[in-house]
Amino acid sequence: MSAAAATDPAGRPAMIALEDVHKAFGPKRVLNGLDLTIGRGESVVVIGGSGTGKSVMMKNVLGLLEPDRGRIMVDGRETTHLHGNERVQLMQRFGMLFQGAALFDSLPVWQNVAFGLIQGRHLDRPAAKAIALDKLGAVGLGAEVGELFPSELSGGMQKRVALARAIATEPEIIFFDEPTTGLDPIMGDVINDLIVKCVRELGATALSITHDMASARKIADRIAMIHEGRIIWAGPVDQVDDSGNPFVDQFINGRAEGPIRMQVRSL
Amino acid sequence: MNPLRRIGRAALAFLNGTGHFVLFMARAVSHCVRPPFYPRQVIRQLIDIGYYSLPVVGLTTLFTGMVLALQSYSSFADVGAETAIATIVVLAVTRELAPVLAGLMVAGRIGASMAAEIGTMRVTEQIDALTTLSTNPFKYLVVPRIVAGTLMLPCLVLVGDIIGIFGGFLIGVYKLGFNPGTFIASSWDALETIGVISGLVKAAAFGFTIAIMGCYHGYQSRGGAQGVGAATTNAVVSASILILVLNYVITELFFSR
Ligand SMILES: Nc1ncnc2c1ncn2[C@@H]1O[C@H](COP(=O)(O)OP(=O)(O)O)[C@@H](O)[C@H]1O
Ligand SMILES: [Mg+2]
Image (cartoon, rainbow over all chains, first blue to last red; front, top):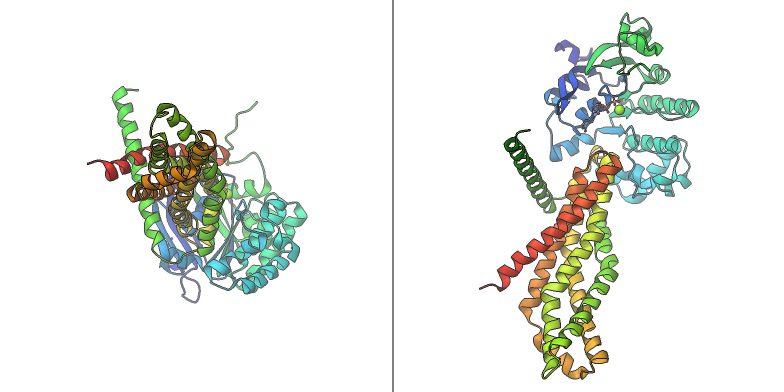
């Protein structure tokens, strides 16, 4: 990435920049020189096949995994190898919706949503609960749901609770890992609207992962496609249909034939 | 494969695992003394480890005290049986049996549940979620368990001491027909500070071991339900073996001369 690409028009550094990030698990190379920049207040959606390293990319930015090579910059500062208290401080600026919701099953729903407020921001419990119930309302869940435990909720409700938890502290940067996967189309669209609304209202910088093109078109300012551990195309959402990139074309049209070969044997 | 290579590989894996564990333990202990602390989590663990283990520890030590009295009677059925039996029960329970049996029982109960809970949190990304919510998982999950384990096991063992000796008393008085006053007096005479203290030191060491093994194996678990199952087994087995080894080492420190 050139230095120019890592700043916005006002000359401020990009909110998030991944530069030449490599990550392997044993012999399996997952990220292979990945470059991606996300501007301040921008909503970028990363698309790509299953198992291409989209979640791994997010976890590298969050510090849940450490890159083998390359740099990760957040707001102009290198955060690649931050640990301990500095990492905890940095995480105050982030919200994350995990692919599998990752709700704390030992805590009732409202405490899940209030967790970042109570533990991270040190709010007292009644104040945090009020905010949590407010956020639950915003994702279409009533106060009575707040007293239930995550195991008592359907998958779609868990996803919405996870969304409420990700936005509860009103973070500057929000990551959504497959927010609509596994939801029915209507609930999926409700979640899309919620994400758009949250990002607009909070003015947050958003990075989302999806393989649902309807969702991508709705929430993205810019779309990037990952393939074999690299970003092979990135551009504004309205250019995705005439990207001129055969990989992108195959993916957004959902064709089995094309440059992307699935590892399957014919019957 | 070449057998030498196989041995070399196994040795390296062992050293690697040991190194990992030592680092984990050092990290856990260093977080014990650095804020923030999570008192709610500590209290939850104190109750879980201390209060809910009482029935298990009580029953185990009660029957152990009883069987000790019964067994020794067949060997000392002649003169001075009362004193001999009271002494045997008191020494064996306070020095060895209460700490070791309580340790093993709690390892089964608590070590397993710690490994299963933390392991499940690991494979369902709840531990990652903690980090993204600005909470250090070591401080939130590991430290409260270690603190509670180390504090609670001595309390349990103290209760176990009393119940175990009481078990011996029950058999002595109601089955063997000893005079209760004499039996209590001999038990009191047999009680020595070093025996009780060594038992409590053992208990603290066992409590730490159980908690650190449960947390370590849970924290390292990978790969879904099967990984969590393996972590649970490993936590209980490794804690149990370490308890028996440590028991010998601490006995050696206190009593050998
Ligand atoms: N912690 C891990 N250890 C080993 N392999 C991993 C780990 N996390 C992810 N992988 C591997 O990395 C690849 C990419 O995973 P992931 O990023 O989850 O894919 P996706 O693009 O569907 O989100 C997969 O093949 C997965 O098996
Ligand atoms: Mg994924």
